[in-house]
Length: 251
Image (cartoon, rainbow, N blue to C red; front, side):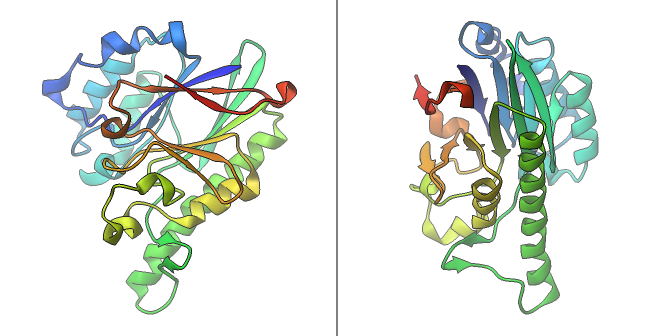
């Protein structure tokens, strides 16, 4: 059984340095890896990224992350990524990583994702160039997620997790105003997860949303935005395919 700790939307800045570290230092007691579902900073500045990096450096479990829209706000995502990677965080965008956890190959595929809405009420590649590019950007993110998950399957991963910032399903947005759903996620991400396959999908972004949801194909989705889970991280248990078990939430 693999224990996946996950949280998003921690929005760290200089005044929050050290606040989460005591909880993260306990990870080895309850988790095998930590997933960060974006919006790690407030404005995407290198100064804020260094605060996050200090919080994550030397943790007792591997850390895998994607960036969120806040991490892009300062228009320096490459610098934010480099600072986090220097601290040992595996930052993903349209790619995957494989972790060997006590002989179990755990694959994580990650992308920030983007908006666009959900089946029946979604944007399309029609009309003005800006609208077309909005949806095409989401599609590129979803295509990268699909390729990464497929590659992880081909690499023989026993467990696969899809990590995004934007939501793949409307279920976990319940509590948010319906008018902003198109800006909180896209069905294209869920299509990628369902067609390529995964054991769990994790996202953030929807602060007023709901923790539990599922894709149309029955893959469990968890909104781990910190304002939703109201703790330093949530822990989710995953059985490898060899164990023929189901994912369940813990805690």
